[in-house]
Image (cartoon, rainbow, N blue to C red; front, side, top):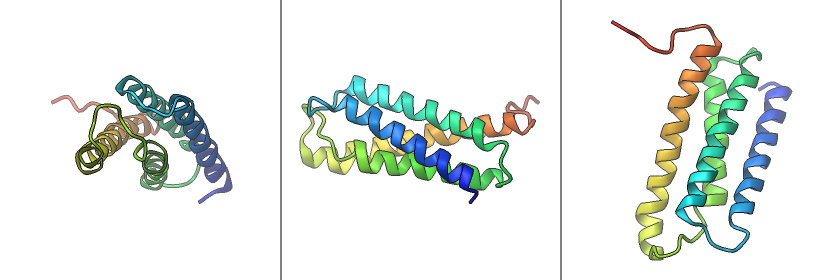
Length: 127
């Protein structure tokens, strides 16, 4: 991995963590704050996609690196938080995995479109 890409990913993860910390400053996380952090995650992933398009790494490597950063951010920052009104056992068994998978899915497909568009490929395939 190139040093530029590693530095960019590290900076983006730090920015996401700061955004997550700001959302949980009161010790709780609401569904609205989850949405805000999710949106910020997608925005940062798109910024990374724009940055990495100029680097020599393959599209698959770029996507994998960005998704790993997003997954690490979710696992380390968002998943451990308690959501008010959701029992801990239900949150750990159902809510956290579902939110993590949903975020990964949305970011993955958003990156597919962004990286394809950046490489000049058609995003939509019209028959």
